[in-house]
Image (cartoon, rainbow, N blue to C red; front, side, top):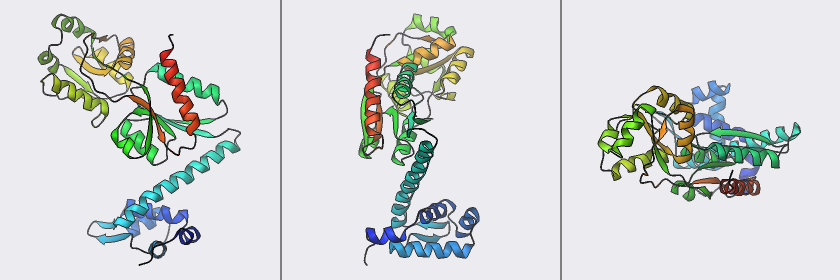
Length: 314
């Protein structure tokens, strides 16, 4: 069987074809896809046949669960999502230029990012690019990495991961963080007298970050190194205001946070940061981007500015 060549695809493939494939994958039904796209069902069926002719292979099969993408279909769908993300980004960049802005930068950050890092980030960007438009997103490391790979973000300040490196993301070191126990004010004096009494700590009301995040995984390793079973948290949260409110109102509340975030949460909640050091192997925080990122030089300058700000007293 012959394979489709670039000239063949370039003269026949349209963005609307990609949109149709993605809707078919989402709906798993020709009729539902037709309804959502506002098209007649025969039109969708005919368009799918046309797209499969362009790629010279079957992209979907029918099963009891509805339409299922073939191996070729999964490959085409992955590229379709990237193509549509690029097209959407281009449209928004052109709209920014049309409104007088000098481009647009989409930045992602993890929730456990200190005020100092936030200030360095935006001070540098707003000073260097006062006429640039910005999109800011806050999410966990895994979510930000997926957004980078899907080209929905230009850069992200998040944690290093092996998955990111293997996927082709450039990871530029910014800084390390150390863990600290943060406890409600009522419990602080009692714990200060006991030291690191892990059986007593396990029985307290724990707040953990969401599952499958680097901080959550490292908290589990801290309990393992102490020879203790991981307690069942009464709450999962990473919003600093939520953490502060719970620590303020629950007498036995306790959590483990990176040192700079721990102090910020303690300052607004009245909680206490315990002095004891914990075993920690949390991946460093870095500036992460695609190797072919549109604003690669700007992102690299931004990373250097953040590193410099953290090394500068005051």
